[in-house]
Image (tube, rainbow, N blue to C red; front, side):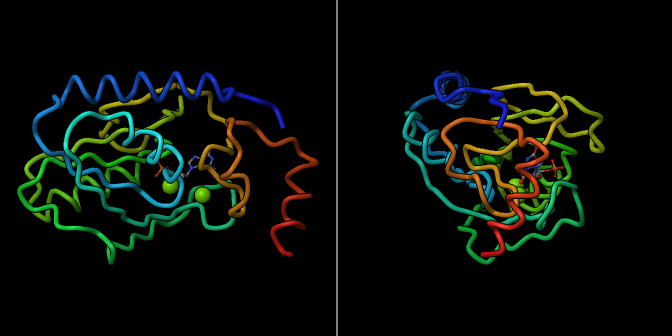
Length: 181
Ligand code: 5GP
Ligand code: MG
Ligand code: MG
């Protein structure tokens, strides 16, 4: 594994992200935070405990990488979503890659009657995005590589790593064997 961001760098990044979000929304008005499952799990837990405003917390499921390293068709499951009508909503995701996920979810939340919809991500991949939307808050810009750790997976593994890394070719094959058992 090649480390891209250490545990300490991630920590500092989440601190910065929380400060930006705090100063944008202020400490008084309630904010509805929606975690985009599953990749944002670790970031979300770290982020919400650093924010000052009263919070409502919910989740939505979005998947486009099912079992691989390439972006495919997006599927969304909003069965567990809490009420967002007339709320200020912040979508939290692990990474902004093509942008299709957050673009789609922003429209969905807006259509449900939210007062405002913004997005925060840990990572913003430097590549051509296929949508006009950009994340409102991002902790790090990273090169166009497939990364794992701190919530991000390959075959549902590596989410527990405290750092962010890039898999070596040999690890990619080994992961397929591990994930099958
Ligand atoms: P987008 O819709 O912006 O192309 O992709 C967003 C989703 O794809 C992210 O929420 C994440 O789950 C997945 N994804 C994109 N890039 C990476 C990556 O480098 N590593 C991992 N593990 N997942 C990624
Ligand atoms: Mg995701
Ligand atoms: Mg994934």
